[in-house]
Length: 228
Image (spheres, helix red, strand yellow):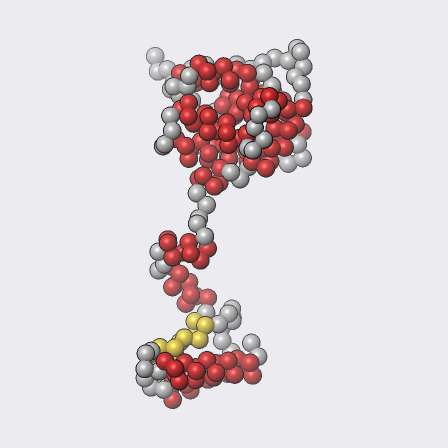
């Protein structure tokens, strides 16, 4: 903050405010971005102005003063400045671009004829009140579910599988309050499918990823333990 520029701006702004608004304010704030505090020549100028204008209080506002003001704002006020805060719904969308890579790879990869097929976890369909139709779709997805694990084990980013899992969990949690279990499954299927819906290979890839995370219990609830 050069002395000449700072004093020129303060003088112009303060005198201009006095000319037009002197009858309507008793406080004038000098807002600045000097992270280490104001230099002495600016501090002296403000003190001199306050002494020469006894009816007006002069205050320097830096980062800390502005933080105090922002902490008093309502959520609606903050959103006008920064936009809406990310919700569970918006967080759930974050993994789709990465998920699309997985879907495209799965759609092009066949399973091995002698490859073992995992089963749906025992009791999970019933524990979540899912229909037999949903169970049929998940069983179809389980046929290639091992390919999902293979893909994540070979992918250059070791965190991809868990990041997508977190997106699925967030999306699932955002749906629980307003939808029945079967509707939740359909919403997850639509979300995971993205805009490229329709091709059988793509739809099977979507079901494969859903079955993989269903079997891992990232989506839907685990069956209650039998205490007997």
